[in-house]
Image: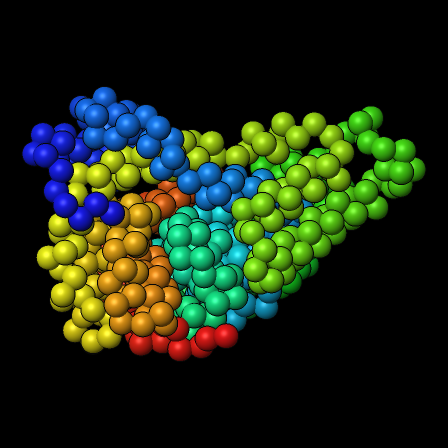
Length: 491
């Protein structure tokens, strides 16, 4: 980060370009320029170059290809895991022998947090939102507590690993902290934060979570079945086993009793004419079992490789291409599910943030705040955490990490080598949990909100203010409780 201010015209034009990017990143549908986040990031990058804040060669050099490669490969692997039914199993785990609303809320918090650490918070929110709505509706429970549990737990859980969210990827690459060291450095804070967040949800919505007992819901289903002339036992059986209608639909496919897939799971669909002879000789059930098993095995291998310290980007890419090759068919349906707009957004953001750094303004602001933000004092950690919380909600968490990461680490380097690692982990923890402050603080929040609003059944509108009422106290308390635990469990 440049520490000296650039000439005034460059500072003004660079700040203007960054302001355009920030406005469209936070408010992508402003009436006078409703072009969205991705186009807004590209516009900010182009303005930086047009205004000569950053040169074309420096702009290309600022794009972090390892991060883009890891994001791309993670999305490909996630598509195959979704096709293999991984997230359907998570939904079944949420419903299995659930004992009322409070028990279900605790399950949502725990399962979502742990899954988000391994499969990213955004992915978990995409696939679990409708499951959660179905489970709440079956038990005559309000949707809001469960949607809040899903969004906030996904953000908290994703803080524990470099692959949990995009800002952690940036931190892992820039800091060169190994996967295991990152995991053990934040895991105690994540577990404590998950527990505290769950308790706060239970306290705030205790009465609303009473709902109907499983037996009462089952009795209601029996009455409906009798009125419609169906067998009561067949109607109640699936409820007693804990499977929601949405989950049963995904599991039963076309109603033939075999595991099937909906449109979203078409990655694993079969086209026998394109398969190798070995596939032709196997039964359809065995072919599907082999592909699913392979998806699980190579994913576990990818996580083991991360823990052994292998290059995360190329490990993920190798895993993705292994899945494509073994699937033995045209990979276009799978590649079509990659969010290329997200990759373009990151590319534009890298250029925009790099140009803003060249104005010297971020460095000058940090130089003013640095004496008050030393991580070897409680007051310094408090000031630093408040700065990260505010910037993560004003400028989003990934730009905040890009702007502050090197400076925070450089300041910590004057204390000790261990302080440098702790400063990176502190940045990861606070910038991630900061996403729970408001609905706009995290992409995961917006995904839950939009998925719930557009759900074909049991739709729910999670408003900005209904999120803030819980998000603000949860963020402050969880952040404060987690900070002392950062880096305590080291390897």
